[in-house]
Image (cartoon, rainbow, N blue to C red; front, side, top):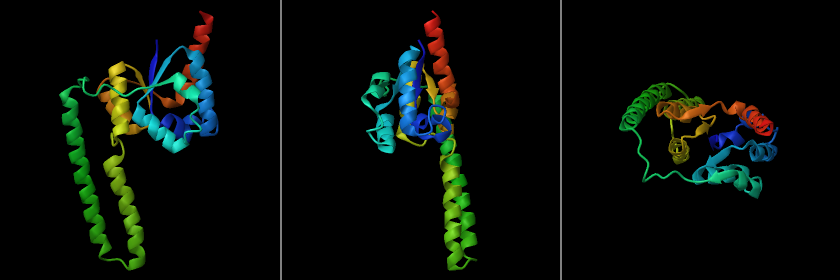
Length: 196
């Protein structure tokens, strides 16, 4: 049986949920219908489910969602992961912090030459570059860690549009699937199930 671990991006990223419907509400409904008939198992950590409820509103996540998607946290205290991953993560964080500091230094030097009006534009640019340097392509939330650990624990297929989550899932040997293919995969599972 196929086991899929879902991230919020499946229902919040328009490039992903658009394969189901044009709105998040419709996408959730279509996903539920397809998932119910697919024969696959779907999981989502409770922290991710709470985040999704906060983003979409609890009225969008109808009771049928919980019938199809099992809300379950990873067994954090029982799970063993390779220590090399921790070393790689620390190296990555250190590199990103140093990169962020260099960006801040560059912008600070430039700020001394500007008038007040242009300082605001410089600060906006600084924030964008700093955010990109520190957060893009890395696991940066407990929800990301929960998705990663649950997929690892269940030997499931991770479905996420988050570049950092996908990168680190690949490092620990978790199966990943392009989230834009989810509908096609569900329809194929349904077709295969009805054919047998």
